[in-house]
Length: 147
Image 1 (cartoon, helix red, strand yellow):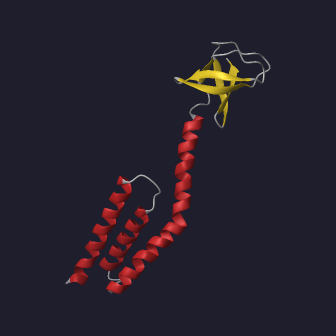
Image 2: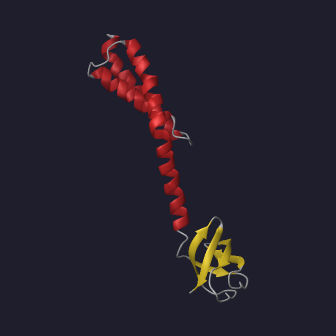
Image 3: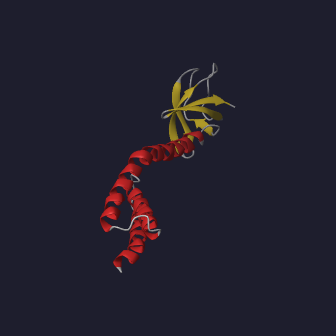
């Protein structure tokens, strides 16, 4: 009786582990164990794996292989998307210098309600209050040019 019901136990475990991953901040780790449980449940349901010991052996093997193969690329894609969205969204924005900035010089400017370190990338000085466009972002320094 338990052998016929064990597929749904694996599916339930997979869904619970996926829910735990969604409820916790962090490193995208538990979801791979949830996926492994769902795979073992599907293999059990189709009759490809019937022995309980084989199910328990496949569960950590599938999870660890998935972690090894997919975790770093997935984290890299998520981080790259987050950083690119934040940085790219500043390029083209209007910054207002709070000090006079000589050509090639550094200063401070207001942008989106915050004060930023800026660099004048043109050959002309920038005056206090002059509208400038952000042309690139170099770490925490915004390169600006007057409009």
